[in-house]
Image 1 (tube, rainbow, N blue to C red):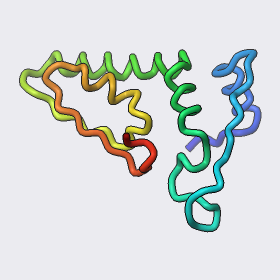
Image 2 (tube, one colour):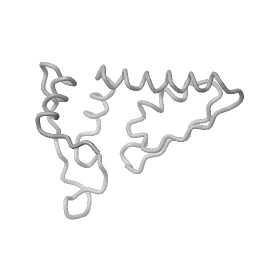
Image 3 (cartoon, rainbow, N blue to C red):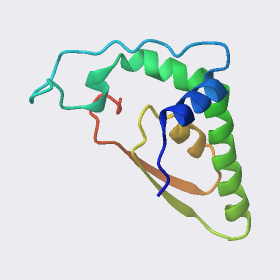
Length: 116
């Protein structure tokens, strides 16, 4: 297991965000429990998160790589494929998965605000 230190976090932050600074997360005060939350999305503005992940070039490159890897594997086999996406979040990957030929997609997430 690799330990991540503050200097590593700063380096990663610079690589991901460059000269820009990360958007500020507005925490919500809804839900139940000691921290007033029951869902991950209760901690932040989900629409803001959705816009950020769909627009960020690194995230889009990562999703593209995942889809290309799946296409390569699928090309080596015949027939239909069943894909289970656990923790689909805002559905960015799911939207790409459903475009794959001969694939049956099941996507799920525990966060009630993720599934629409």
